[in-house]
Image (tube, rainbow, N blue to C red; front, side):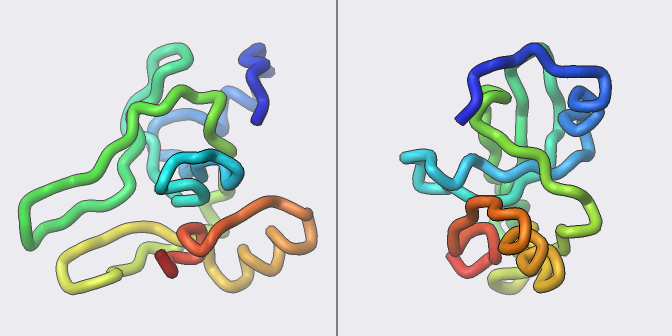
Amino acid sequence: MTTNLDLTTEQEKLFLPGCFVALHPESNHPDAGRIGKIISRKGREMLVEFFKDELFGKTDYSLIPLSHWMPVPTFFVEEYEPRAKKRGWRVTKHGMKMFHEFGWGYTAATEGKK
């Protein structure tokens, strides 16, 4: 995991609200590899949404600092429902092919299997 937070202007654009990120796959966090959508960011702190559960009226968020995330291109991400009325994001089959080709780390959560 990188701890250097001196981002270029182009890198900053990858961490704006609405962008997708993956929690670093080598993290010890139970959601390692999970895809989330940035809701807000202030400096090193980000609010990232993992799941929205309309059945229970609950949304799962993370407040883990920016250095624990990697940006994921929007065209690699698709919305899915692990169960009725619960929405999250995963990397598409084409996106996973590119993850493999680029040597990017991932977990079952990246593919929406966990």
